[in-house]
Image (cartoon, rainbow, N blue to C red):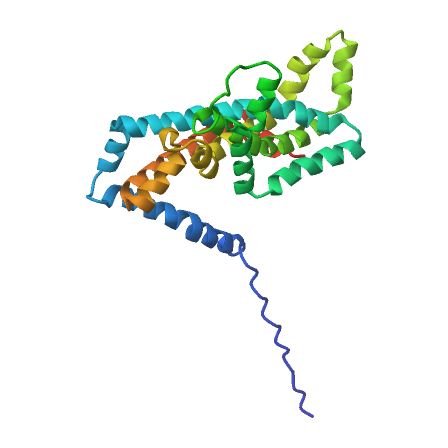
Length: 289
């Protein structure tokens, strides 16, 4: 009797995807929607209308373009400063008031964010004009004799943009302040610290990473803002985003438009690198916890 031995072949183990396979879709999206457009802008900025760095030389050599960049940085810095000064007390209030009232205020802030940007900007045009509510109120209170000019200048742009940017610093700061242990402030009070000392020496230093992150976001968004400066500022107070739109759409000068856009991108990356250097990745990543 012949015995036959049957061999059972073990199934081949499937190879598990490597780490690169998991991140490949994300890398592809980044390449398609970020790297390729940036590379295209870079090429156009040094190739059109003639090869070289003539666009950058004209951008920094023209007093008109320099003034537009100065307007942009001035307004962005003012908007950021005002947003921090106004947004910090509001965020602190949202963090400490009872949940019922906090939910109402939080909903109002979210509603302002969800309202159409163009509608909000036109509303500020109505409020800030010479016959608007603000001027009439100031005249009625006897604070001014003549209406203030707050449209078609940088004052109107700053006011309108500050209102629009406030939620972007209030919401992150609320999370940061809410995450600070109340016992820390109580301990400072027990050690003899006044309310102002607790604010300046305890609360603000603990919330500083969140303040820096929110301020950076507001500043960067302000650098590239278009709608509000175009409507409230006018051509005499043009900012970089409006200049890029005119260069590309009206003058069809892709080279200069690409050069201006890349300058803003480089400035943004430098600011972000500075923030990482000062506060580190870990502290910034913990601000919303």
